[in-house]
Amino acid sequence: MNLRVVFLGLALFGLAATAAAAPKPAGTVGMAEVVKPGPLPEISFGPEAGVPVVEYGSVTCPHCAAFDRDIWPKLKAAYVDSGKVRYIFREFSRNPLDVAAFTLARCVGDDKAMATIELLFRTQDKWAFVDNPLEPLLETLRPTGLPRDKAMACLKDKALVGKVREITDTAEKVVKVQGTPTFVIDGKTYGGELTVADFDELLKPLIK
Image 1 (tube, rainbow, N blue to C red):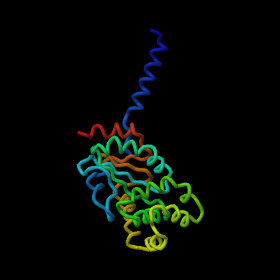
Image 2 (cartoon, one colour):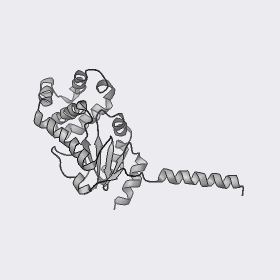
Image 3 (cartoon, rainbow, N blue to C red):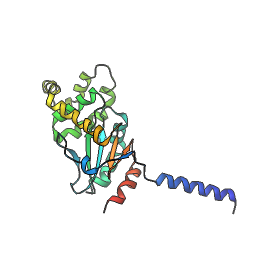
Image 4 (cartoon, rainbow, N blue to C red):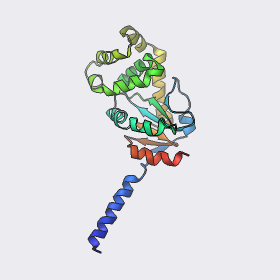
């Protein structure tokens, strides 16, 4: 057999093996500590008995928006809707605009918070990267039924704003989150946009 063909085959095999390998964790953390209830009602999907997966996301983060658009629907269909995974989204505020947006999402309703966050992800270019973003942000949230007077009152609600900030503070202290999105699976942290294949490699060994 031609040695060149052999080497090429080995190289392709090596590339395939690398592609299938599970991503390397950035750190470790006690999972029981991570899933402790926070100061606000949990934004979660799937049964309590499912394997917990925690995402820390920023509503002004383009990578988080891309994940929500491209990966989350497939992940939800494969693992959450089937009852295998309990998926928890945690608000990670990288800046004051994140704090404001997350606060307003909670004001729409804890049960509607994720739908509101996904609306903000889809419309990120209209409000997140503009000068004087408050008015575009409020305009973006009009379809949720949140009136302007209530929105402004929410932004002045120090107790609610403090709880939104506390989620981020805890993420930094306990999980050591440094960027978004960050995922915690089986006590290991992973930074960046994981693919569906990455989740397959990480979750299949944990699902009984």
